Amino acid sequence: MCGIVGYVGPRGATPILLDGLKKLEYRGYDSAGLAVHDGARVSIVRAVGKLANLEDAERRAPLAGSVGIGHTRWATHGRPNETNAHPHTVGGVSVVHNGIIENHLALRQRLEKDGVRFASDTDTEIVAHLVARGRAAGAATLLDAVRAALAELHGAYAIAVVEDASPDRLVVAKKASPLVLGLGDGETLAGSDIPALLAHTRRMVFLEDGDLAELSADGARIENAGQPVTRPTKHIDWSAVMAERGGFKHFMLKEIHEQPRVIEDTLRGRIDLVAGDVVPDEIGVTPEVARAIGRVYLVACGTSAHAALAGRYWIEQLARVPAFVELGSEVRYREPVFTRDDLVIAVSQSGETADTLAAVKTAKEAGARVLAVANVLDSAIPRAADGALYTHAGPEIGVASTKCFTAQLAALLLVAVYLGRRRGALGEGAARDLLQALVETPEKMRRVLSQAPYVFAIAKRLVQARHTLFLGRGLGFPIALEGALKLKEISYVHAEGYAAGEMKHGPIALIDAEMPVVVVCPRDAQFDKTFSNLQEVRAREGQVFAIATEGDTAIADAAQHLFLLPEARSEVLPLLTVLPLQLFAYYVADLKGTDVDQPRNLAKTVTVE
Ligand code: AGP
Image (cartoon, rainbow, N blue to C red; front, side, top):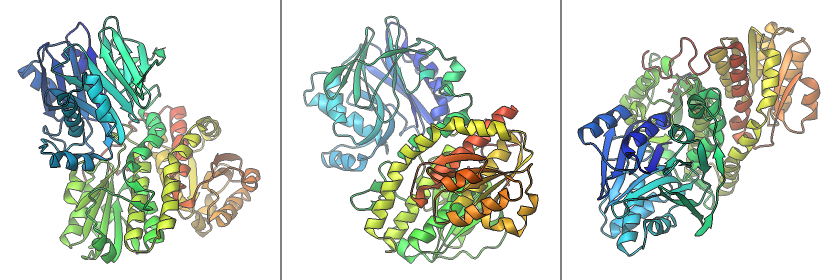
């Protein structure tokens, strides 16, 4: 998730672009760059690291001119360095891009066969080559060349393009990644999100997928599928703070609602439904390695350990290889017996968690193969691993992890299918059906999130509880643990997650009218047993908040508080069952007035033991 900005008008572009990028820094900040047309040609400046480094670089080599584009990067392809920083310039054409070009390898190979030499490892540079070649081949305008280039791209993009030959305009395009236009007085702006534009105008146009627009000081000409289109101009009355949170009260709530798109971005380009298979990036687990694996250890901490627990179920069910979950802080001191036949999967949002990193190093020393599932490209854990499967969740600002957790679930389910297909444990048809269900899950997540007010009503009724118990079975058990962690870490209410089957072995003594019990009880293979546990709670005056499946009348009578999910295959249920628990924790915390985005005592990344 990167941030892009564009400006064309009578004022100096550079300060406007830099200010816009500052407002988009929450979207990514491992490198940044500007391209500004001074009336004769486009000049660029780029810098690795935070935006302040770009400002320093621009002060050393000032960019004059009133047409320009800018970019702040969250790397998905190509390490975070200056070479891979946007803009990418080819033959006088400069491009900034937010998104993922799925067919970038095929396009790069075709261009290289044509003699093109790439300067970077990014998918974005391909766009600059295609547009420049279009212009060199006779495209009458920059707009024509961009239109032709986009026709060759598959995937997601929001792009902005400037060129030497067009001193008074820029071109933008949108597909699956956000792009907003700002209509000022005698000036026109573009940005990935409202915050980048709000200081200059409140009149905004939200482009739609397939839109292509030529921006000049007089305004924007928009087309779609080669035909002129008009998009409504909206008046945005948000404050700057509200705008940065997308209109949500907290980053955490914004990130909870971003999850359907995050899952779409994490799955993008990695599923081949025709072959019924997973097409992972270079994850460092070849088919031969996949077939030779004796055991899988998933190592993680906190929320990532809960994702790892779900990953364990999937790997054993789908790949039929023994799988174990180890807490980073424990395994590093347990003198574990890793061997060369082990696959160690290190799950980490930040990729910098000290306990997990130490376990990875221990596994590497024992000759185990290590796969990192991480959200930050080129962070310490992926660098220490043999390969990485990155989640594409973008920066997670809320300290309590939400969108990165579900992105980890999606990535681990892909790994399980990949291993199952390589080991012959999962047939093509079964894999296709499962992957189809996974592809359909973001839409079901949207439906669940649209019911957030029902969770708010339940949170209001339970906000005074001083303790809460979360129960779940099978894939519901990691979700129960995660729901408990979310509640305790942001609302400071004591909460415990338990395997539902364990309740009769002790925790049932806790049950009384003062103890809300959240039961993850969707219509899955464990339903009957979990439902029995729910009834045991009710028989002891416990207050039950059940997460169930639409149409489940039995549970409707048994639970005092009920949230219903759409029908879904059991393997993808964790992506749905966790959503009401995230919302529940959020609403309870917000009602209690805690610092939801930065809860007391917590750090976003624990780089110490
Ligand atoms: C999640 O809500 C917590 N903030 C914390 O448990 C976190 O998951 C844990 O510290 C692991 O972080 P990582 O995923 O960056 O390794």
